[in-house]
Image (cartoon, rainbow, N blue to C red; front, side, top):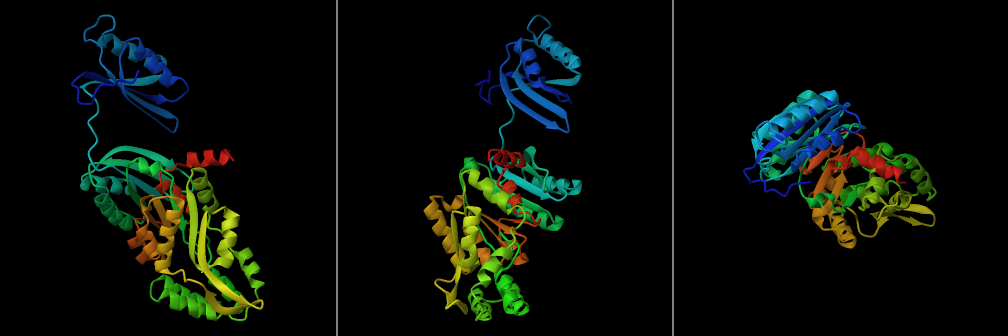
Length: 406
């Protein structure tokens, strides 16, 4: 049975550890062996790495001595069973439960492609320097990147995030730090930028290619995304170059849009986990509305190209979705979804996404410009959008299980 002993009780305990080649039945075999001594189970941990099992059981100690039911007999019996199972065993005496974890608990997710030993060493060392203790490490994914998660205690989350952001930048690796708690598994609202985030393209440049002015539009777009130009002014200037295009171009552009690798997996997994997903774009509803239907999105908002008599006029209609507008829409979507801002996630790449990233409970800069990476909670520099799932503590196995459920 699982013991109800308090962690502070000074009771004699034994840490029973077995390790060796894994196969079915080992966990049951160890506890069947321990059951003969009527010990209480205080803690259990088990991990299997490349087919090798390490199983630890912290149990109350039976009486000392060498008689029936004694600690001495337990030790002898466990070693005999382990030998018969071709395992090694180690039994360590002690007092009480594991020490209580320190205050300030966080999850640190590290993404590597590949994840090198020097990066792991540097992250672990920086956690120690910050005053944290690594309580547990587990792998979230091995594909399309290696993702590992450190459970850390003893240091405030914000301080740890600051420390590791510097290390991540120095090592060119992606690191996310989030506070531990039940909220991590609560349903979320995830809102994404579209151009160069959900999709690989800049939609206005696709239109511009049909108008024969792509280089001019691309240059203005790049300056706007770096934060060098006012977004609204740059939008009007670029759209004006599209005047006279036939509206049939809209269907051609929709067909040319390329989803970012992992986009479908990200959205499908989030939806199956009960999350809501939306997009906000400085692009155009003529494309985002189609994406909403195609991907089953809950929310979508963008600018609208004006079309009169079958031709693009070179103007947009309605409220402009700019930098401030994206943050405003995030808050609106959250209110409609019934999700507090603390459980919202925003993903974007450009300067006009920065207010949205700051307003969200968790902002992710996806293959973003330097100014955006510096402002976000964390950054992803690999070209797979579904890696965001690992930053939320979702494992590759959970993603595959969700796919298998249909």
